Length: 261
Image 1 (cartoon, rainbow, N blue to C red):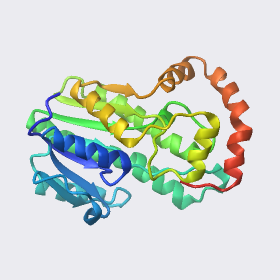
Image 2: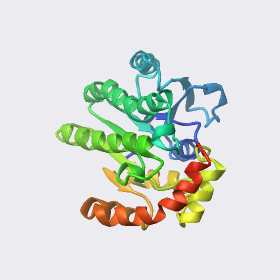
Image 3: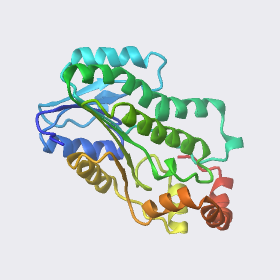
Image 4: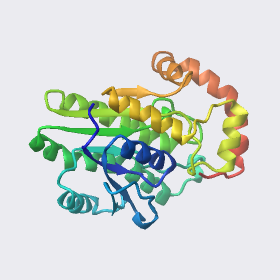
């Protein structure tokens, strides 16, 4: 995929992966429109970088997107890497938290695509990239709601890619494994350490996402052996059930502590 001189809307540019990705996109000659609820806190990425306010959980997100595309009509690509995480037992999760995760992690992906697909059709080109998670393929204890939203993003992007297969619009799904970002508390980091899970720095994930875009790959699962576990879970879920059952006492130690991220 050619990136230089294109204009990309980046959602989640204030997060760890988003910040690192913004730097790499700007270095590749991409004109950036970086969206955040607090655009004043975004790091500048040169003269071809602009900050805009978007609240992905807002009921009027469609109207906000319309204002952004009117201000920047040259947008011909979107990367959605915004998200919210919560490590908690389902019965301890309040409805407000559930609704917000559904809005930010899933609904906003759908509304962003709904807004830009007709615009990209009119342009005759466009790319939509959705950053999911390994937990969008493997349900993990303590992440039931988060997993539900990420499973939804994976299914949505797959269906949309097939829906647009005869169009000039590319749809990409990228699923990182555990990443060391501000979304994770010290407790979640300690859990990953206790389980032996590798946590990638956001800079590494951003570099991998860039490679996915440059090579125009339509789906990518990042990290080994996590990508193997994704395939095993699809073919032999009971095997993964057994592994998770053995890990459950360790996971519950951190869940009992009431850890949130």
